[in-house]
Each structure stands twice: as structure tokens, then as C-alpha cells.
Length: 540
Image (tube, rainbow, N blue to C red; front, side, top):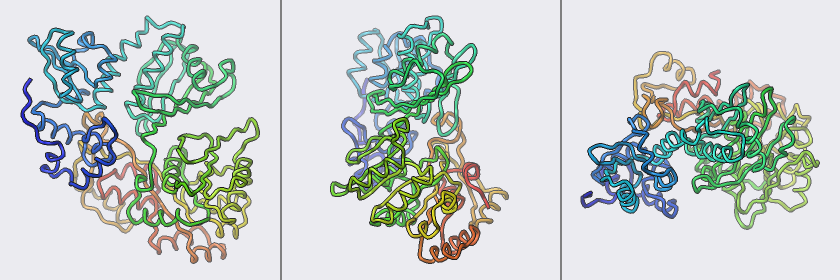
């Protein structure tokens, strides 16, 4: 196999106008040991996987393939062991004229090439494929062997193999949750990817008891209790990466349903810059969180990314000279340098009791996972009024709705506008796949939507559907935001018992970008679609 003299990847990317020198230098700073520059550039959104593969084709003088639609000869998996394929990111896909075509993430991995040639006796022809594409294909093809229904029994060994495979599949697919649903005659496995549930496979009902027991043991749950819901967590490694798992069980007619929330440590935001705020909103939010005291609230429904934004905010403020303490239910990510307290209602460690104890620990910054009751709200507000910076979340439809919600909890209005410094609402929308994105003229209805919000648009970006996004047109998710900073003028309106409509009108006049406006702005930027924004934000 002859590979011509190669230009550096960074040089080729710059020549193609895909990245700048500054972006390459930034990527080099963020690059982990043994991580490739191309993978970092894709990870941080500087280039797409399709662009990377195209450049690698030029650099290495090799072809690239998309395995999702490639007619793979699945019998060839017998030639390469699953662990070797996964560890070296490769998979055999075609055999023709004594020549074995192998899709590789690193076609310059001469050790793997030699190993396969020696073990199979075939000449090897490498082609390039993306890491995710290879891993998902390995899980799909080799996984079919692992889930041999006839071989499944009720002993522990199959349960261990099945759970390991489910976790690998979930992480590889970038799923947020794995659903294990029991039915009368089978078990249904579903993955939630980009907010949408996809049915993956069906397993025999005979496997249920051992699979549930395996999960409960790992999560530290009571394996003898099947009548009550239980919650637990697992810290493990999947494909060499640290992963935290949140486990929730629920008794149903046909057995215990289990949902496993996947919390990849690599996905946690490092700072405010990674949250996805518009530049002007980011500047306001950074100024807000650097105040010495006050209450900052994040609002939104379950699964809107509030916790990730909270972690990004306190990570931004995490300094050796600052004492940060959190009380959470549950502790989703374990952060170095931050004291995290796990709520345990069974022993009386509630948000309220935990918060009272925190105040005796000389904190500078406090994070309360959620304000659920009047007592927690009272303590949070009094903490903010006594010199502490307090972060917390509320379940409300918009940022402004947080104020009457606090009133409903019995908080006096003067305490609310004295303590609350800012409120940010957020929702998650799916991002247009960059590999198949294209623009088209905006239709009349789309123009009208923008016009109603005082904006104009001539063209919109949509995804045509490709192998990278599994023909959906979307890949990944992003947040849209609504930030309200409580100013003196707003305090005066609150003191005068202004209605929500009056408050909204005041905010609109003062340039506050509501959820719908931020979403439409990101539509204009080509990041998402109008359909996605209207799914999570009201037009009126």
C-alpha cells in the first residue's frame, strides 16, 4: 500500500478555507493525549465529519465510505474479532479477488493492517470512515451475534453481555436515555437520540429478571424490592471513557421498567462560553453570575438542559479562593473543587434541610438543584439576601413566569424583587445536520412568522437527510434562551403589582430577546428550523 507524501491536515483544511490558523491553534490546546486534530475540530464544530473525510481523502489518497448505507458483507466479521475491531476502530466490509476492504478510522495504523493480513491471508485495502460510523456499525453487526435469542437464558452471563452492549450502543449513538420496557412476551429496548425515542430491538422475556438484577446490583438498589420505584446511579467506563449512569425503576403490569440516563463526562459544559448563548446574551449572563450575591434562576421543563447550564455557570466561577457547595437530587456530574450534597429524603436530607446545613459551611456560592417547595424557596431567597450567590431551577413555561410561581410558594413580593437578580429560560431544539444542510427560499408562511416578531427572512436552512444524520436532516441539539436581568425599572413595576402582560411589554421595549425570538435568530443563522423552534416556543 503506497501512500503519497502527505501535507499536514491543518494545512489542507486552511487551503480549503474550512478553518483558520486561530481555530487550529485553539483545537490544539483542547486536544487530549492520543486524540486526533480532525476529531477535535469536528467535536467543537469547526468542521463537519463530511468535510474531514473529504480532506483525509486528499491527504491520504484513499477513498472514504459511509457505512450506514454501504452493502457490508456481514459474514466477514468472522475474520476480525469484535474487541480488536472496536479497540482499533475498523471493520471489514468487502472481499473481492483475494483483497479485503477494511473501513478504518486511522488507515495509517500499520500494526492493525499487518495483524489482519497475517491472520486472514488476504491483502488489505483500507478505506476511511468516521469514528462514530465505525462504532455504530460494529454495534449493529457484531451486536446481532451477541443478541442471539436462542442462546439467551436466565443465567447471569447473557445479562452482563446484554447490558454491556446496550451501554456501548447508547454512548456510541449519543443517546441521552436507554429505555428497557417489559411486555407480556418480550422486552423492548429503545434509545432516546436528539430528544426522539427510537426502537432498537426486542429481547426474550426470560432475560428480564437477570437483566434487572444486574442493573440493580450495579446501581446499589434493593434487588428484592420490585413493588416500589427506585433510583440509583452507576459510575463506569464505556469504550474507555468515564460515564455516569442514572438508573430509575418503575413497577408495571409486566415487570419493572428501567430508564438509564447516560451522563457522559465529556459532554459537561466547561464554562459559560459552551452553553450556546448569543454574544450579547452571553455578555449579560457573564456579568450577572459575577455579582457577589443574589438569586439566579433557570427555568424550563424536564430535559431542557437546565442542569448542564447550571454546571457550566458554577464551573466558570470555580476558583480555589471560592467555596462552592451544591445540594442536588440527584448529583448528575461530579465536579472537582465543588462540594456536592446528594438529597436523601428517606433519612430526612431534603433540599431545605441540606440548604440549612450548607449555610453553616461558610459558602460563597450555593447551587440548589431545584426549588420544589415553599421552605426551600424561603431559605434560598434569605441566603441570597445575606451575601450569598445562589443558583437554582424552577419548572415554569417562561422566565417571567418564575415570579408569580415564587408568589404562589408564599414568598412576599418585596423579597422576590430584592433577591432575584436574573432569570433565564431555555429549551432544546434539534440542530440542522451540517453534512446535508442546504438553503431554500423562505415560503410565505415562514416569512409571516418572522414578520410577526419584527424580523425578516429570505431563505432558510434545512437538512436533506444523509448517512451522517440517518436521513433525519438533524444531528445534535442546541439550546435557545430567554434572559431577564432584574433592573431598577423592573423592580418598580413589581412593586406596583404590574401584570405579566405589562412586564412582558416593558421587557420587549428594553430589547429582551424572548425564547421565540432567540429561536428564530438561530433559524436565520442556519442552526435549526422554524418547525423545531415552534415545537418548544410559543409565537405569541
